[in-house]
Amino acid sequence: MTNRLIRDGHVAIIYSPGFGAGWSTWNIEDNGYGQDLIFDPGLADLILNGKSQDQIEAYVALKWPGAYTGGLQEARVEWIPIGTEFKITEYDGSESLQFRDSDEWITA
Image (cartoon, rainbow, N blue to C red):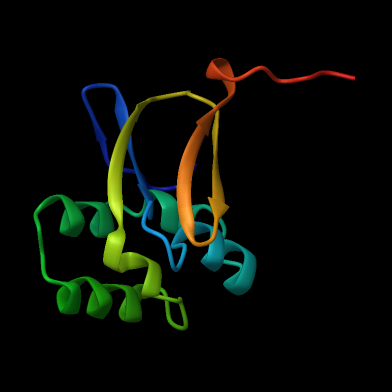
C-alpha cells in the first residue's frame, strides 16, 4: 500500500477540479507515476496548509521529477473513508471523484 495521509479514518486524495489541466489524470497517463502522487502525504500536507504554488512545485520537482505541475494550481485535498472504491475522471482538465457505491455500475 502506498504511503498515505490518514486522519479520523479518512484518506487524503489529491485531485484538480479546475479546468485547463489535470493533476492526477495527466500524470498517471503521461508519466507513469501511478497512484502514488494521488496519495502523496507530503504534497497533501502542503496543500492543506496553504503553502505557496512555488513551494508546492519545488516539492513536486524533487519527489516527482518530470511531473506536470499545471494541474496543481487548482489542486485540492478530498477526504474519503478508508476502503472506499473511487476513480478520478477528467474532462477538459477538470478532475472529479467518482465513487463506486454512489453510481449505477453495470455488470455484464
